Amino acid sequence: MKKFALLLALPLIAVACGGGESTALTTATAAPELDMAAVEAGKATFATLGCVACHGANGKGDGAAAAALEPKPRNYSDSAWQDSVTDEHIKKVILEGGAANGMSPLMAGYAAQFEGKEADLNNIVTYIRSLKE
Ligand code: HEC
Image (cartoon, rainbow, N blue to C red; front, side, top):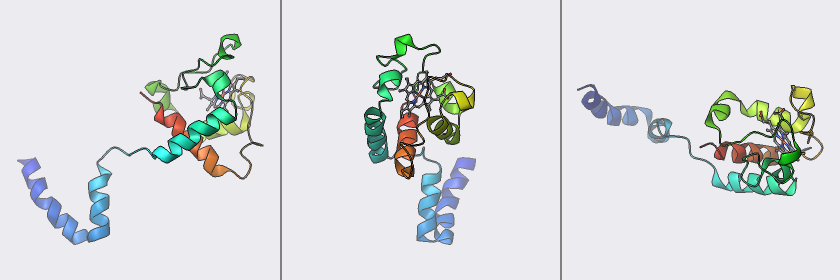
């Protein structure tokens, strides 16, 4: 019954809000869509900067160099980890490296590589987020 009332109310709300806002109303409940262009760009940068050597081509922490690392890079598909960290944390570790954030010093800081390239950094974060399973 509640659902029925809501269905009746929706067009009214949409009319009341006007065209632009009614779109916001319908998309607000849907899961946020990934920006696939950003995911692809982030994935490319992840490869060019050599992150794949340790983190693996698919971010599972199984890159060629990972066997020699202790602790090993985590598996980015781990949804519990994904839910436990903010985008800010991910960016901070990438820019400052592990040591400055209480993590392995073998995770270097990449501040120089991302100097003036905030879009590239955001794309890498979007790519990492896209790996959540
Ligand atoms: C030499 C190997 C190596 C390379 C290259 C490397 N990382 Fe890492 N990275 C690590 C290790 C090891 C950790 C885990 C540190 C820990 O858990 O103490 C880590 C952790 C991280 C984290 C933090 C994840 C968490 O658990 O919170 C992020 C984000 C990250 N790396 C991104 C990158 C990106 C992006 C690049 C490329 C620009 C990169 N890494 C390059 C080894 C590497």
